[in-house]
Every structure is written in C-alpha cells, then in structure tokens.
Length: 157
Image 1 (cartoon, helix red, strand yellow):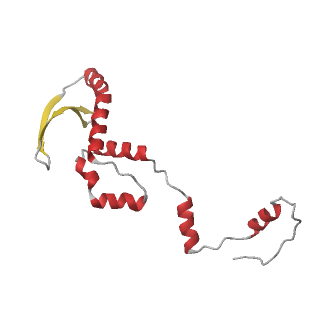
Image 2: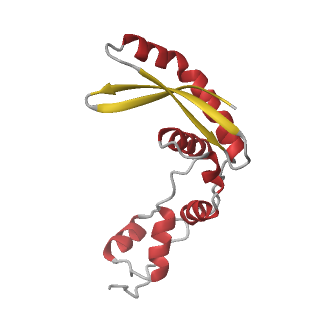
C-alpha cells in the first residue's frame, strides 16, 4: 500500500481542497479489521421502527405464526444482533395490529370471494392458547391455479 510521507505547504487563507483530493486519489486505503468494521457500520441499516412492526404483523399473518413467537428470546437475540437498538413490538401490539389489518382487508376479501367462480369450502379451526383461552376460527378456502388459498373470515374467543 502507498502512503506517501509528503507535506504540502499552502497559505493560511487557501480553502481549496484540490491538493487533498489529489492526495486521496493517489493513496490506496489499508484494509484493517477496524476499517472493515467501519465499512459495515457506514453501510447503515434500513431499520425503521414502524416498518419492523408492519413486517412482523405480515409475517405472523401470512405464515400463521403464534403471537407468542415475537417474545421468543432467541428471536429477540437475532433481531438485536442485526440491529442493537431494535424495538420489538409485544404480542399485544401485534394482536391489535392484526385486528386492524383484518378490518382493513375484510371488504377486499368479500369482493375476491364474491367474484370467484367455483367451490368455496367453509371450515373451522379450533385451538387453545398457552394461557388456556380457547379460539375458534372460520376459514374460507378455494383453489386457484392448483393452489389452495385460505382466508380467515372470523374468529371468536
């Protein structure tokens, strides 16, 4: 690597940066462990608190994850490893957001199912949460392009 030991003299009122720019272009940076850590830090993070919350809600809804998964210690450790200052929403917040998402999409689901030409299967799914609260869900399923699509119509506790 090249690090010239050269002093450039200039007058005190010279605010030009051309010598500095020229010097930077001539020098190749030394790859050190510290510089690699700095590059990783400087790359930044796309983390935003609201986006994290929305992505967790989508993940739980699309993949049918239990609400308690968000309070899993190992998952929290993974989130904190990726971004130390992450704000992890609690399951009550995710539950409220899921209800709001359901309310926002209910009319859209009515239109989708209303326009469907074919058989729609209405089924139920029951389960008991860890805190022994029983739940019953009403689900509508249809086949589109050989794949089953299911929609949560309602659930009661």
